[in-house]
Image (tube, rainbow, N blue to C red):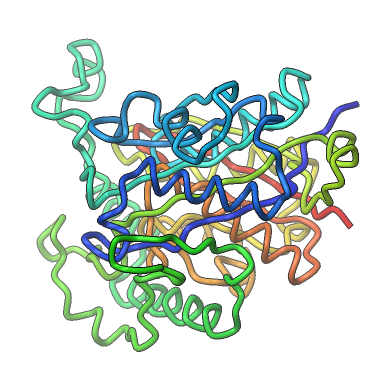
Amino acid sequence: MRDAVIVAAVRSPIGKRGGVLSKVHSADLSARVLAALAERASLDPAVVDDVIWGCVSQVGEQTFDIARTSLLSAGWPESVPGTTVDRQCGSSQQAIHFAAAGVIAGHYDVAVAGGVESMSRIPMGSAAGTQSPLGDLYAKRYGNTMPNQGLGAEQIAREWSLDRGRLDAYSERSHHRAAAAVADGAFDSQIAEIETPDGVVRADEGVRPDCSAETLAGLRTPFLEGGVVSAGNSSQISDGAAALLVTTSEVAKKYGWSPLVRIHTAVVVGSEPNIMLTGPIPATAKALTRANLGIGDIGAFEVNEAFASVTLAWQSEYGAPEEALNPLGGAIALGHPLGGSGARIGTTLIHHMKDRGIRYGLQTMCEGGGQANATIFELVE
């Protein structure tokens, strides 16, 4: 039987809005990550059957099938196709699932999955412009107001009894863990240097080693007066890209690649679309059931830190060990480049599993419209 394995995983550094990557066109940012993936895997791009690329705001420079534009910008052969996926924040995690399904089915032998978002250049919400994506039938069911993720995060905090102090303390932890990971060189093997008009970028820009809950407590709560959700306990608006090389064990052997992990289980669920952020809870349950595993079998969890309340609500449901949850920090510290985040999280988790000898790792993330992906990776010894 065919399986799906990942033999290489690379990401760009994550830049802040208006920061070090803001002068790099989205397709060029993707191209540099694709080039780094090929170099590190000794990959001849001509053997790639498809590039499946996540991107949320498909407008302006991120339209015209940015997957195809990116691979051509990387100098890959014109024979290599590409397609662009939108499952909101989970777009590039879904790209991994599509690539895995493709190689298992025999549609592909070699596929690249990943994604990009430059939120500096294409601000969130740009794709809709002045038009609402909600039609009359949707409005009859859910109302004609676009769901607000910040208000969803506030509602989750209320329902799971998460106060401001706990959210800010979690956010402090995210920054401190990310700073420790940087100091320990934990990201060195996964980050590809990105050349910009102002020089070469080698490190994530948003990590604040001196972050404190006391400082965060002074930030306003923009979504709800007297609320608990602030910019400090929410994910950062970011620029970034990531790419993973997906194939089968048999094909990997043919090309001399050593698999890092096997894609053990991949699921997606729908959830309530107005709150829209609770999906990781049922997605995790579905993944564990499909995998015939329990929480105790998983050695590392990456639950996207869209908001601290989302991650803490998930943890309260599953009781995952504190030390195993987002062990290198998450989107609050590192950033959340929407369409690139699923692949970035996967890249970070896979390298962490390899570095620590962790057999099973799980990643999950909430997604606009009320959805969530969950993926279980198994270390290949």
